Image 1: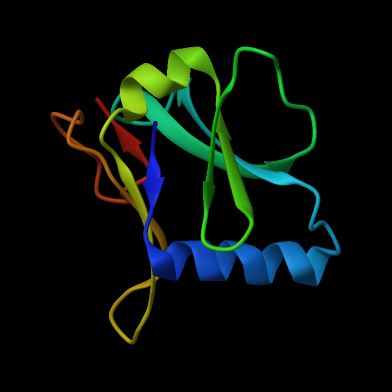
Image 2: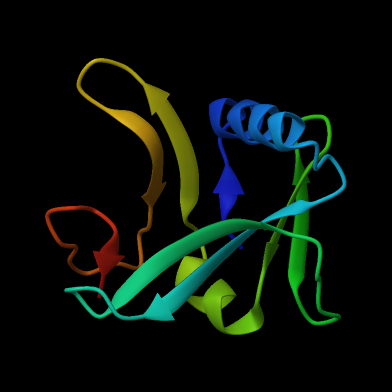
Length: 107
């Protein structure tokens, strides 16, 4: 299961509140595709399957991951940076053997 840094949890909560979707969860998934084999996908979701892995971060940020993605995200961390050189969400995945230049796909 992926973990969220405190900074990422705060940003996700802000985005949920801005969307008026406090009751939704952040779904993190791995899909086939991208220039390195797999790509990350993140979106707000209210359709939570019985076999999804779930965790809560910060005050009330719920994260869900499907079973297939959970295996590829084991030990991974979702972080958020807001600086001059780097801004946005970043997944640090120890299971990735290589990644592309854009950082959105891995193998």
